[in-house]
Image 1 (tube, helix red, strand yellow):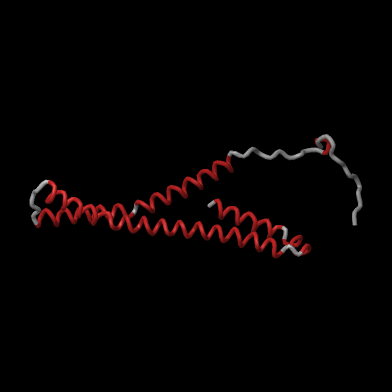
Image 2 (tube, rainbow, N blue to C red):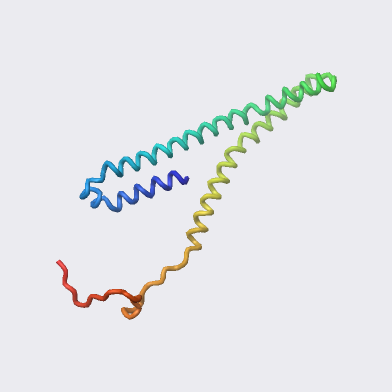
Length: 152
């Protein structure tokens, strides 16, 4: 989100000052800055997608690995035989565990996004009000007043 915000800030700056950028022929400079920020954002998004893929793979494999580990512990470590009814019941329960675990990465991701949004909203709502000048006599010290000016 920080990388996206940085890129959006420079894009907004470029759009707001497009006439100045064109007038001074700074297009290449701004294009390079935007492209560099976009490349950083894309690299971050690739890392996030890789992490999500690894997490998804681990979550999908956890029930099977847990079943294998529990079956091995029961038979090899404790020396108790495993009947077909016990095995199929355990597999069904581990399968249900997999369904629940499948939602865990999504819940964590949504929580992080909600926390970022909450922080931004709190920061915005806690800003102080901007007081305007109500009369011409409210000008701060050192201010310049132009009365009946003509400019061309």
